[in-house]
Length: 120
Image (tube, rainbow, N blue to C red; front, side, top):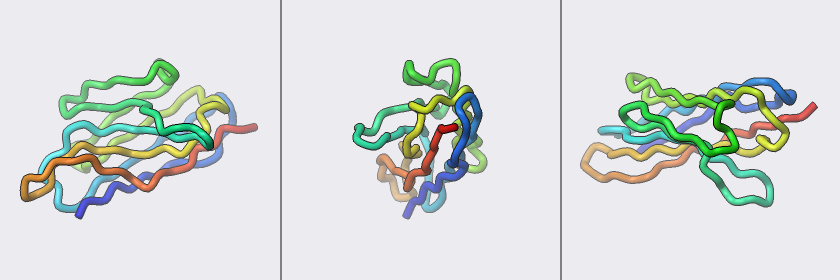
């Protein structure tokens, strides 16, 4: 079994910062890309950004220059640093990992989500 557990969400004022973490655990053989998605009420889930196994990153246009992603391979953990937050960044943020489990099956895994609310 594989688990992805997010942490770090909360309430922040506009212009503030938050750092989300997502730790993967379980019968993991190798992790390829790890990424973050978000879903606001009444909206579809959308990609925020991702980081590959070689630490190459890519972001949605709406967060470029404000958010960064990093990973600690020794800890199977990915981080999302969010700066200059706006009210429209309010959403549930989900961690995603493209990984291979011990035994050879590769697939997408999701965390349970963490709420980020940007409001004064």
